[in-house]
Structures are given as C-alpha cells and as structure tokens.
Length: 358
Image (tube, rainbow, N blue to C red; front, side):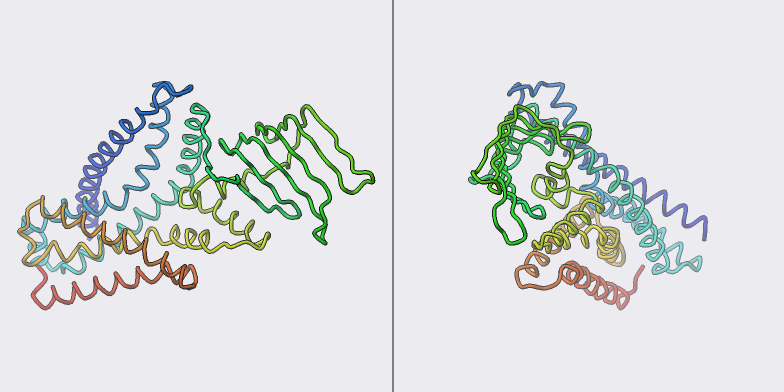
C-alpha cells in the first residue's frame, strides 16, 4: 500500500506541477502586459514594474493552486484511468474507492501544508508589491469623495488621501471624551510611517478644553501610536489578501469599536475551509474519470476540470454573500455551499457505483 501511495502521489504531483506552470505562465504574461500601460508614469520604471510582477507571483500561485490541483488530477489520474491502471489495481485487490480515498487524503495534506505556508508569506509580499507600485505612481489606494473615516477608541479619524499604509495626506483627528464632547481637533498635512513611528508634518492642533480655545502649530512631530497600521489595513487591503492572523486582529479591532465584523468573520472561515474546499473540488471531479468517462480525451478532462472549478468558485462566492445579506452567521454562510457540493458529489458517486465504478 505504501508503494501505491507514493505512485499515486508522484502522478498527482506531476499533473499538478504541469498545470500550475501553464496557468502561472498565462497569469504572469497577462499581469505583465496589463502593467505596461502604467510604464514610465511617475517613477514606475520597467525595473519597478518587473519587481512588482515578481512580488505578485506568490499571490498568483496561491489563487491558482486549487484549480491547478484540480486540472492536474483530471490529467494525471484521467490518463491512469484511460490506461486501465485502476482496473489493474482493482484486479490486484485494491478497490477504486480505496484509491479515491488515498487521493483525497493526499489532497487535504498538500492543501493544508500549502495554505499554512502561503498564509505566512504571501500577504506580506502582496502588501510590499502594492506599496512599491503605489509609491512609484504616487497613487491613492482609496478613492472616496469624503475620504476614509475610522473610529479608534475615543477618536474619529478622517484621511483624505491614502497612498499606502505608511503614507497619508490631509488627516483630521477628532478626540471626544466619554460623554462624546469634543476635546480637540488636529489637522495633519502629511503622515509618514517608518521604523515603527509616525512623522507628522504641518500639524495644527486645536484644544476645546481650555478657555479660550487655543490652537498650536507644529512643523513636525514624531509619534509611535498615531494610527495603528492594523487600522489602515482594514481599509487599504482586501480582507481575503490578508493573513489569517491579520484577519483575526481586524475582527478584534472591529469588536472593540463596536463595528460590523461580518465580512471579516466570513473571510476568516473561508480561509480555514480552504483545504476542505480543494478536497471537495477533487471529490467532485473523481466520478468523471471512471466508467463511461474513462475514454475521454485530455482536452475534455481539462474542460470538465475548468467547469467544476468555475461552478465551485461562483457558488462559494455568491451563496456566502447572499447569506450575509439575509443575515445568516458567517460560519453558516461558508459551510452551506460546501455541504451542497458534498451532497452533489455523493450523488455522482452513487450513480457511478450503480453503473459499476471502474
């Protein structure tokens, strides 16, 4: 059985590596050509462009991983089915369902290891890539008519221009006491974060506590806890591009400030479910490798794999969003489409078993 596990793993990984290479090449080419329209805008030179694209490759691998695994399974395991290898295994006493079970276990372990590693490395590289591009283009990352508003404990913060989580312009900070009486108001022309501290430029601070009201002007100030970078991440970066740890911090921040955390909680559960999502996609694909589907060409297998991936992606995106609108809990919103696809997969296997799974 150990030899069988190793053989299946090698075949599986060969198909996966080939699929990932092709998909990643297409994705990188499209990304590179898409960035050319910004070339030589501001400080966005070709060298910066290449650096940006290279830093986004890990994110592309992360996004393409389940689909590469799915198509790889369709190709490699489909070829084995076409060559009657599963029939030979069955003749040797190894049931097809046992083989499928081994493949699903391997899929889960590979996915769990991959997502654990990527959750540790990909978000930071993605932030670095976006910051490099935005700084080079001097580009705002948030576009809202009235700027961005935050609530941080007893402060309300408005940022008119956000270029990255380390460069802000035209910031207004309103500080209230516990009775919501305005204590002070600050206007900062520019704030730059570096080496764990904020440098505030052209600061005007008005105090409403003293009588008469006083206003002070500072050419430059250095503060450590001006705005938490974590606070900025909530707005600047899409929740699904953050690490699991950052999402959990965002949830705590939103809870502390009595703000809606439903989206962050949904992303939290989606991240935890990722290994299971990949297993379910492979589970759905397996019935299309046996019986009357065994003689399908590689082209048909690729099409089937793509269709399964697209249907799974659309459903697992739409149903949780719909559930959020209705008011279901984030956990239930994420769980529902997975249960649905497991039920569909079960029916597919049941049908194949009735026909004779070979």
